[in-house]
Length: 147
Length: 315
Image 1 (cartoon, chains in turn orange, cyan):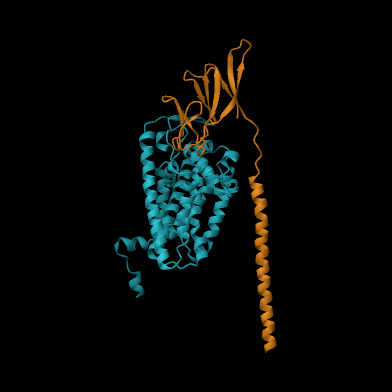
Image 2: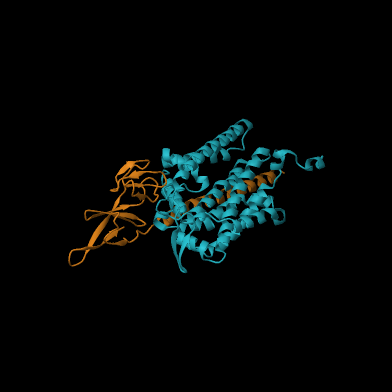
């Protein structure tokens, strides 16, 4: 009777041990898979630079809004200011009447040069490189913005 | 005794508590999923706004299917909240902590499903909401970047991951959360015919909101459930407004199956949190109205059939 009980105990212990082993192995495999999952999903191929051409001359207002930037031309000198707000990434607008750039989400304000006027944003708007295209007479025909 | 229990409920409280909120929510979800499959077969995540606009304006019955998906999804989430509120009010739930957390995790997942649906529209509201969500996720220390790579990653990959999560990831996760509950409580369409008819009628009669990006759009507030959070983001950093504050109410919800005193504290916290959020929502709503009502223009949208204009009523 005692020997039978002991055997039963051993069997239960073994079952307990095996089920724990399987659980731990499962947890270990899951944990081991988490890293490759995050590495796989986190890998991004840097996009090729995009070139956006804006024809010259700009409208009388002196600016042209594209999806990613606002192009200003001041005395022949172009500057392309990013439209991505440095606060939370919303697309900013140029308010022509106030001559400022404002974010529609949290009303951060910037000058037309992208300098921060008021928050909640903490940084200036970045700008993109602009190349001037001209014909053989030297007249500006367009602007190429590299994003 | 049983007859007395089953007697017609009297009073507003009894009437509210005896409604089939859970069944209503589930039927709304069924309609949302079915209409979502129909919409998904036409939707193109590479051109989200163009795709949404053409579904709404060009594709035959597109407006109806989009409306059905929109209103049934809204109904699902609101009815899910009603179901939860009724259960908490009746105080007749008896779950272990782990089972309760698994089940109630369906609420934030449902909210994320609703949210990703807004983002996928790709209009001004959806685009801004997506950008904000991405930045909030990235503000989380240690796990922010990895979580963003799974959930959003809109700035690098567009709507690809949002779409995959809306369609599969969040649906599977939500399904796993409620699976034991759904096995226990079943529902039948026969008991929800009025709700089904109301949703169908709403989809035929009402237009679905869409807000194209346009000059003069000075204030974007996001989806209705996002307004309070948007307001909070004016005052405090993204992590505290977008992660910490929402996490407190979720933690309070998860903590509910405890002894009575702590449970009551959690319930009071949830009520006060919701009241504060309602106040913030009202402030945010009041902030938008005077600004955006001043701009009324038609926005041209180029479609395969030629240029179309999105009327003011659809915004």
